[in-house]
Image 1 (cartoon, one colour):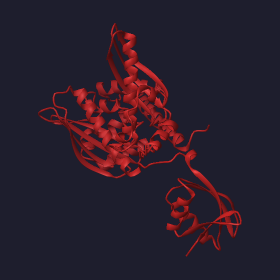
Image 2: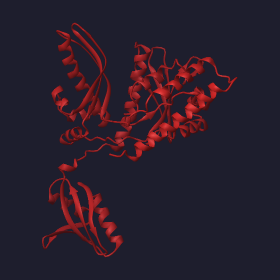
Image 3: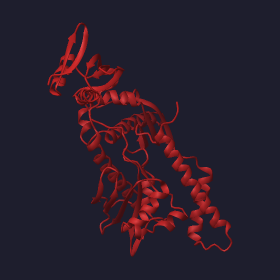
Image 4: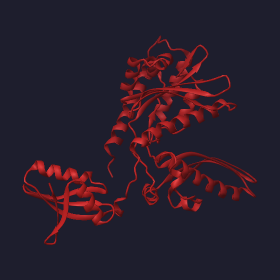
Length: 393
């Protein structure tokens, strides 16, 4: 199967970005007398090595849940592993529902067991496995079968969307005493975002790699102040139309306040949120805050896109003739049919100057389709064994 256009464009942009970065770094290291700060030189060298040896990221997959952490103690290590996998599967499905469906949608679903979730899975991988005589610890990545998940959502009338929003260039800025950190090594806020799989989110975000070109394009304080010229230069480099800056800082008791400002592709944001993390270690707190913000962004997108969908195989279908006197009348009738509640698709079988034959897929009974068409000003009737749709005014 050939890759779709979005995949080709994403791969081309990734290749372009890596090539630009590689050329920039080679120039800096090759030109005698080039002035590069030691710390930046080391970071640039690390970026160069990653460009040479790290393969491009895989295409985003909203049905894959990664970094599911399990830690279970039982009678022995084998029993602990079985229980851990079951818990991990249930947690992964919970996170999948939270990703694809609006908040509160889990109340529409029954309490699925580990065996129930297994039937929805395509596969599972294990990382960082550790065992003790009575304990099992690991991180799981679980890939779900999209068709099965969709059918479950439909069965229980769960609204959802698997469509991703336009990609956003995301700049996590950490406020420190006397200034801001963005590209620095001591930016726990950036580290947290790199650890939550932002590409597979419903609101995918690309975090700049932080090489010499990025550092010279925009400084931390310029990003924090929303310097439009510098942000546009960075978005042009990565071929992304939208940029979002998240400035985070801890307060006196350890809570994290985040200021989100920028264009998400589904609306401009200028909001302040506080994540209650008092008493947590900084890496745990920033990770929790990042997941909290990611959830807010996904919820905003789902509120625009989520709906109850009907799998094609569960729709009924009918072939109808549509007589018309002009192209304008044909376009009007077809548009009304497509807007009819319960209609899934309208496929044209044949078309002439005076009429067309179309196949309509629809939800529910034929009488229900007829009633809904009438609301659109159309009459569905049978004439000499052929179903016909005509306007009644």
